[in-house]
Length: 110
Image (tube, rainbow, N blue to C red; front, side, top):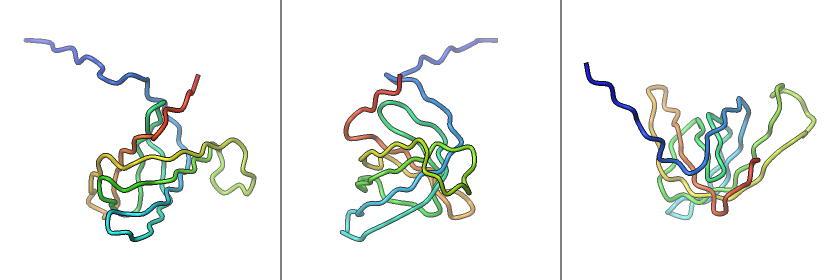
C-alpha cells in the first residue's frame, strides 16, 4: 500500500471558529447582495463560510464576523470587519452554498 502525504499549500494556518458572519457586497451585474452565514474557518488571507444562497466568483464583499459562543446575544463583543472577493462558491443540495473569500488585505491573527 502506498501512502501519500499531502503538503499544505496555504501560507497561513486555518483557524476553526463556530461563529456567524454577515457578507454584504455587489455582484458582477451591480446587484446588491447580503447573506448571513456560518463561518467554517478563517486564516490571515481569507475565510470559508456557508451562506443561504450562492454568489458568483468575483463578487466583492464586506464581511462582518462576530466571535461569540452565543449567536442570540445582542452584545457585539469581539468582531472582525474585512473586505474581500469570492474566489469560489460550492452549491449544496439544500440550495445553500459554501463560499471561499480572499481578503483584500491580510489580517494578522497572531
